Amino acid sequence: MGNRLSKIYTRTGDGGTTGLGDGSRVDKDHLRVEAYGTVDELNSAVGIVLAAELPKEVRTCLDRLQHELFDLGGELCMPGYILIPDVYVEGLERDLDGFNEDLPPLKDFILPGGSEAAARCHLARTIARRAERRLISLSGSEEVNEAAIRYLNRLSDLLFVIARVLARHEGGKEVIWIHGDQRT
Image (cartoon, rainbow, N blue to C red; front, top):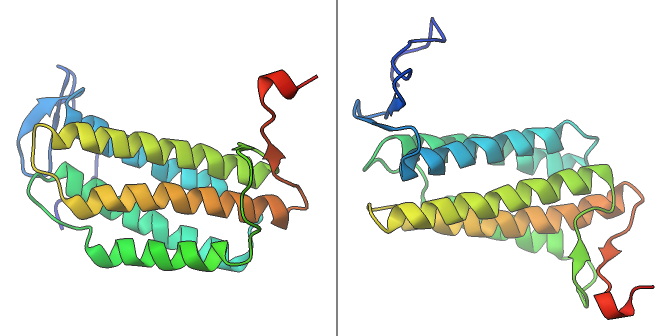
C-alpha cells in the first residue's frame, strides 16, 4: 500500500491544503479531513485507555479496535474506497453483548468516571460520538460507506459498556447522576 514516509515534513500543506489518498488536494478543514482527523483522535484516545491496567479480554478487544480505526481512517482518506465491512459492525455487536452480559441493568444515568481507566474510556466514547457526527456531516455532501457510520455508532456504545466494566475492574463504582433539585 502506498509510499512509506522517509521524511515526515513535506511542506505541501503549508498553504492550508492536504493530500488525500487518491492524490487530490483539499482544504485542511474539509469535512473529509475533519472526519478522518477525528477518527485519528479517537484512535489516540483508545491508546490512552490501553496505557492503563486492563483485563485481558478488554485489552484484546481494544487492540483490535485500534487496527479497525486505522482502517476507517484509511477509508476516509481515500474517497470511494471501502475498508470497513459489515463484519466489523457485527464484531462490535458481539463484543457489546459479551461485555454487557454480566453488568447490572442501568436504572440511572452515570457520569463519566468511576476509575481512571473508565474515565479514559468515557473520553474515547465521546470522541467516537464526535467522529460519528463528522461522518454524518460528510455524508450530506459525499457518498459515505453506511457500514462506517454504523461502526462508529456501535463503537461508542461498546466504549460505554467497557467503561462500566473498567469501573468495576479497578474496584471503583459508577458515579450516578443526581438531578440538580436532589443534590445537596
